[in-house]
Length: 158
Image: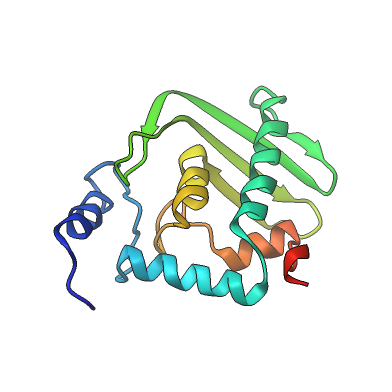
């Protein structure tokens, strides 16, 4: 592993369990934040899917789920539910971004597969390309996202 700058070292420490959140953002993943981002980015490039398409789809499900006021909402082949909590979560990348404490659960009724994310997860993916480390509570595997959302190559890639 390459030597980290002081800023990278602080960020890596902040994302560990017990620093900014109880569970942290890295799970049991031994890779650096930069390696995690690079490997997920490489996978998405290989699949021809852009982060903006993923985030747009996930946000649309969150907004649909909000309509259920905590109860599951049917959306085509899916069922989505949203939980709201009081307060804010702050981006660990230290650029003063705060998001509401809201979690979304999406179930693909055809396959039974699920995705689970927070508003902070969406921000980390959209702004930083960071899906979190393997084993992290809110880690969203890009492969699973593409499978559940049935996303394929972006039109700009074809």
